[in-house]
Amino acid sequence: MSDLNLLNRVRAFIDTEADMLDFEEYNAWLDLWTDNGVYVVPIDPKETDFANTLNYAYDKAEMRKLRVARLQSGEAVSTQTTEKTVRQLGRFRILAESDTHVEVRCSMYLSECRHGNLKTYPADVTYKLLKADDEFRIDEKVIRLQNSDAYLSSIGYIL
Image (cartoon, rainbow, N blue to C red; front, side):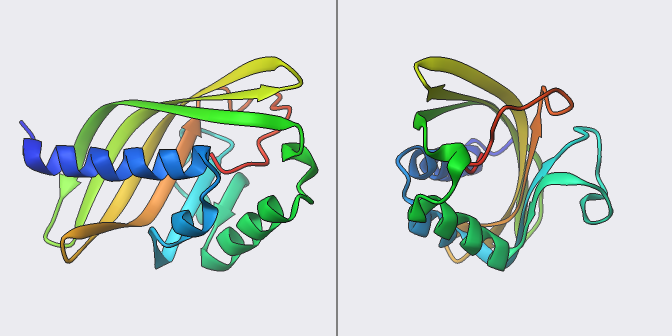
């Protein structure tokens, strides 16, 4: 059984991250990352070699900043008609822990409202979190969309 104190702290951190994204607090979201952190949305949900395969997103620090700048500028056509996103997270499980990192997996249901139509994107999300003092920083976030190999009308926002 996992350390429930650690699990609760990890869950609170990840819930805060989801809230930041739903309420478009992108600059605060950028501050959650390590300098070398990687944000990945693979096309193949079974893929593990992200650097050498095609992904919807494979963002290191600079690309995350550019993605946020595009979202904040209003120039991201794919997000202009998205009225709201809501992330619901659950099924948290600590997969590994060391002195420096925690790896956790959870489920996510992201709903978006666009042109009055509600769409849902279910996913498994894996985080590798750096333990920094008494806080966490995201070292890696991998979002494995359940329907990643299907037609996705738009996922221009941050999952």
